[in-house]
Image 1 (tube, helix red, strand yellow):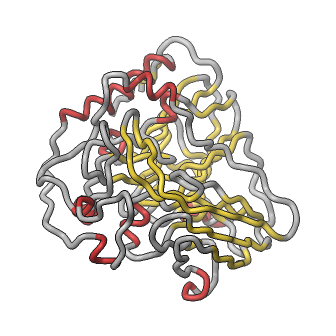
Image 2 (spheres, one colour; image 1 turned 180 degrees about the horizontal axis):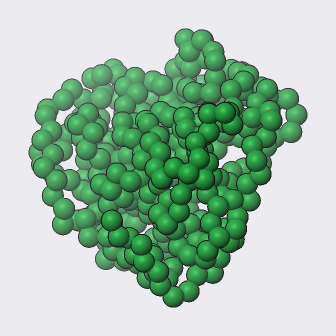
Image 3 (tube, one colour; image 1 turned 135 degrees about the vertical axis):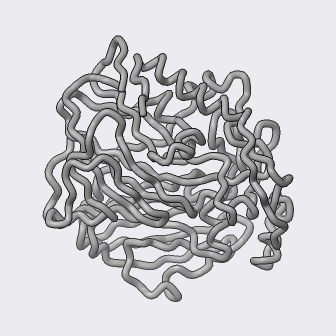
Length: 365
C-alpha cells in the first residue's frame, strides 16, 4: 500500500476530495423491509418520521454525498475537542448530561436528525481516576425515553441504566474501579437505533499508578451513520435496514467525517502522543493504525496493565463497544494519517491527521 504524505494543504485537500468523490460510488445494498422503530418501541417522536427511518430505496447509498463547497465547509467546521480533559479533584466526579433532539452535521454539508448527550455526538468525554466515584445525572429533554449505560461501571443495570422519561432526571453512582477507556451509550430499546442516532461517548479512567507520561493525549470515538437520504437539503434520519445490514453511509472519528484532516491534531517532534480510542459502533470494528509509524505501546481492550501491554505493533482492532490506548513517539516532522485500516471506513470518512512539527515539502509511503 502507498499513501501519499504531502504538505498539509495538499494532503488535506486530497483526502477531502477522496471522501467527496464517493458520491459516484453505488454500493449494492440489498435492504429488506423491516418493522419500523416506532413499532419496536411503541413510541413516536415529534419531528422524526420513524417509519421513514426504517428503510431506503433498495440499492441506494449516500456515501460521499457532498455539496460543491465541501472543502470550505470542512475548514469552517469547528472540530470536536479531541484533547483529553483534565481530571476532577476530590473523591467524586459529578457529571450532568442533558439529552436533546438535535440536528447536527456529520460531514461537510450533511445534516442529520440526532439524539445527543449535551447536544452533540459523541457526548462529552468523562475523565476519572481509579477509585473515584462517578455521580451521573441524566436529564431527558428529548421526546422519548432514554438511558445511559457506562461500560466502566460494575453495577446492576436494572437499577442504574433505567429509562428516563421525557422531562425527567435520574441520578446514580458507581465506583470507577477499573482503569481503561470505556464506552457509554443509551441502553434503551432498540439499542441499535439509539447508538446509531448519536447517543454515545467515552469515559477514561486513569490507573491509580499512572501510565508513563504522554506529551499529548487525544480521545477518538469511532462510529457509523446510516442515512435515509443524503442529508444535503433536509436532515437525514436513521435507516434501520442499513443498520441491520451493517452498511453505513458514513463512518467517523468524533462524529464528523474527516474533521481532523482539515483540522489536524498536533504534536512536536519527539512527543509521546497517546490515543484513547473507543469504538461506539454500533456494529463495526475499528482497525486502528497510524500511517508512517508503529504503535510503540498498545493497551488492547483498554487494559492499562503494563504486564499486558503490547509493543511495536502495526494495527490493533478495537471492537464495537470496546476501547484501546495507543502510544506513538514520532521524531520526524510530517503528516501522519490515523485511520481504521478497514479502508472502506477510510473512504467513508474515518481518517484524520497527526501534524508533527511544521512540515514542509512532500513525503511518500
